Image (tube, rainbow, N blue to C red; front, side):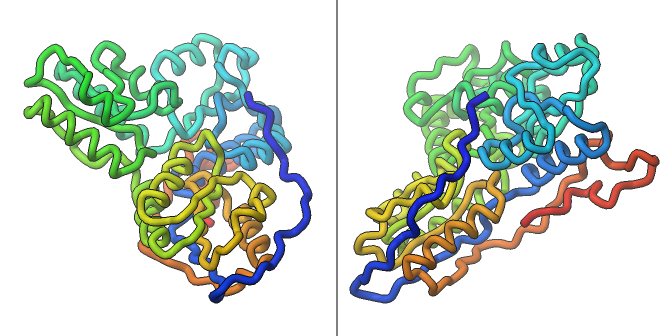
Length: 345
């Protein structure tokens, strides 16, 4: 696994005068979604219930800070289940796994806890259903991403990965009359729809999934940053480099009018030069980012004179997902108070 970086100390950002008033547009919704909340709590609960160590295949969610904190509590992150001692507890990450991984864990006698986001599980079920009906599945997503690997693994003989709109112009299919598209849940909505448009030009009988695959949280965060970006000289997105939805937020901000946009894991990565001549800063965070990291960014910007904060809210989120069944009760067999997620902020 990559070595997590911890924030470094640096001099506070300077308050440099600009022609107009300084302000921050704080996007909402931002940060933790229900699937991330569920997955992180699942690891915490597994540690509480079964004791350390608890193993986690891949990063439970794509955020350096979250992974580091869980490691400090006793979680051990591995690349594959064959690194886990026989008989140990292993948690599958929020991005999901293929049936081959599930079978491998079972063969090793591992006690598996599936923290796959329920919205990803929905896409897995769609893949199984369409493969059973002998459809060719065009899976829009980034090859090599854990979520794409997990979904493709549900029906490897029926799935073709489409990485980009340009890929859509090159894809070949066996039977143009039996083609359906599915997608990774964390993509840019606009780019995904452009990919679908190009696919439909080539394959007019292309079927849509029964419901939208891009998750509500990804869409909500993109809608919010679109509204912020048009008025922002600078947009700062808090999120890790391997977080697809965080990277997409930077792209969306630039596409919708921000003069500049950068992604940071921690506030200390903000560079003084970014703030030169800036009056309005937009701030948001990816769906796997705890709010404490956003607050650190806000504190740093306040030091630089950005004390006028306006929250730009485009949606309300109150969805919670139940924890994996193995974690819904206490060691005494009573229902746990946190059985239904419970820490959106």
